[in-house]
Amino acid sequence: MLGSRSLKRNSSSGIGVNLSVWRRCIAFTLDVSFPGLVATLLSKGSLISASWIFLLTWLLWRVGFASQAHGQSPGRWIMDLRVSDTKFGRTPGWLTLLVREGIIAGNSLLVVWGGHAFFSRNDWQILVLTFLISLIDGAFLLSDPWRQHMLHDLIAHTTIIGTSKTYSFRLKLRQVRLKLLKLINYRLL
Image (cartoon, rainbow, N blue to C red; front, side, top):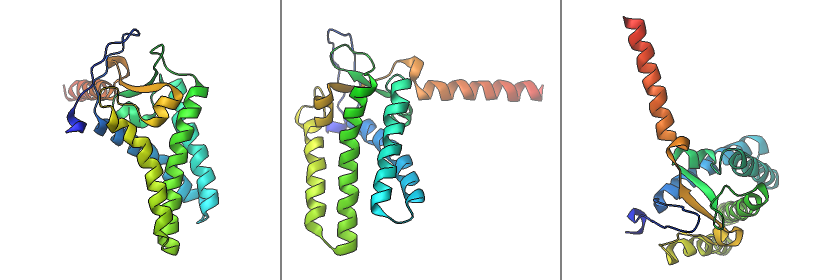
């Protein structure tokens, strides 16, 4: 099962990766939910305005946030993942993130447009075409389970790696829980 395989790689940049395909999928789902919700609420039913709102929110969410948060979008932060430059092992610059996330946003918009064409006009050919374009991007992930690069990763020269404990969401939740327990115990005494 590919989703349970872990990737361990030692490169010249010293990156050690231990992640699964499922963690990437969950992080993507978490990240696409917020811009999708904002676009739905603000567009008033227009597909064109929803697309522009989605695109702008997506880029702010995934480029603006990630460039300031060590390559972590909110979904990647929850799943303990981050984007890294394949050449140097550092957080990529905003231009690299813009290219990478622009490709992903374009794929997401194509799927939404295909779904809209299918449900509004029963045009299944457009739906199939848009899903095929997204599947081509994802097929690169399955074709090389060792490196786990998707097409947008290859174009932007990026990779997804696991985070260190300093950026871990679970570690931060544990710290908050311990502080709350100490506060509760202090109040009860």
